[in-house]
Amino acid sequence: MAGRERVVRMSVEQPMWRALTAYRVLTTLYALTLAVMGRAEFERPVVAFGFLAVMTVWTLLTLPRVANAASCTRPFLGADLVVALAGILLTPVADLDAHRIDGSTLPSIWTAGAVLAFALKGGWRWAAFASTLVAVANIVERGEPSRDTFHNVLLVWVASIAIGYVVEVARASERTLARALEIEAATRERERLARDIHDSVLQVLAMVQRRGNALGGEAAELGRMAGEQEIALRTLVSSGLLPATRVSEDASLGAVVRTVAPEEMPADAPDIDLRTLLAPHAGSKVSFAEPGAPVLMPAAEARELAAATGAALDNVRAHAGEGAHAWILVEDEPGEVVVTVRDDGPGIPEGRLAQAEGEGRLGVALSIRGRLRDLGGTAEVISVPGQGTEVELKVPKVPRGKAGSIR
Image (cartoon, one colour):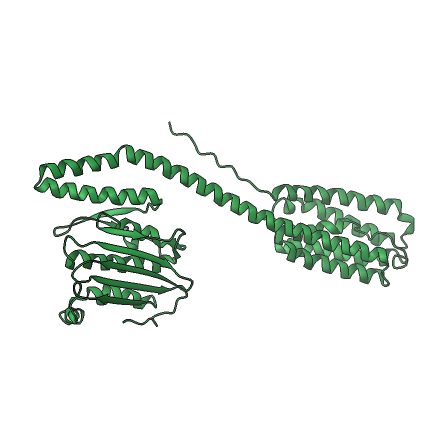
């Protein structure tokens, strides 16, 4: 029986949300205690205790809102900050001497909880916004702020921004760690598959190649095909590029491995690695050179560029002869992606492409140049009789519609 996969979710910021929840409850009790102990100082106790009652109910009802980042929405943050600012500005209404005496406001340090919620949700920029509003409210409430007022305001401002920055760093570290774990898991799985494939499929293909060459005739052709597939499979396993493939049958070329048809990939798919579409072309007569890092492109552009590359290789197989070798080179430039297909065949006589197009043979015109034109790129064919052919495909990273040139 297959074991069930256990998913462990890690969050470095979740303990901060739990701490904020506890902070809001404790500071509510603290504000109530201060108000009860100093009730004789209020000229309008109804205003003071009326606000504290609203603040207490608000705190208890909104505890689920500060349980995590998802539930702490922008409307809640705005309303929570309004409650804190209202409490600060109502302080001189309840205590007429508040502007002359350095005492605590009605919400007291509960206000910092509203600012910290901004910091945990949106980072240091959100914290700076909220703490600035609180600072302005405190200065307005005091009228003539003292040194202690500026000290308290600055403390909340610096602390909230620092916590917001720490939260941003923690989130970035968490994403990096998650990505590293994914890469490690993928590497282990690739190594396991490589061992299994090496112990089974690759050895069988190698044996078929040896026995086919020894028997000759049709068996030799089968051995040749097995050898090509062995090399292609080794390339895929060693590079870790394992896209889905299919085998198409052609009477003149034998069995040829092709990548998954474009229609099987959604048009709105995220960026994909171009290398995964080109790697299956590698074989005993096709060498594949790739950058060490992924070559990410929009899915539609990547599969069109891969299709144009496949069309260029089809031309090599069809016109360069059975003994011709081809090379695929992928270059990820700052402003464009360049794929070069070169072969060591006899080359194309001058004027042959124009003649083929006039005869209705539109392989280069449509399959290669047409695709690149639609991508806003260029397709250049360079061929010297007796020195092979080179097809250079360029696709800009910034879409330019159909403004590409064809040479």
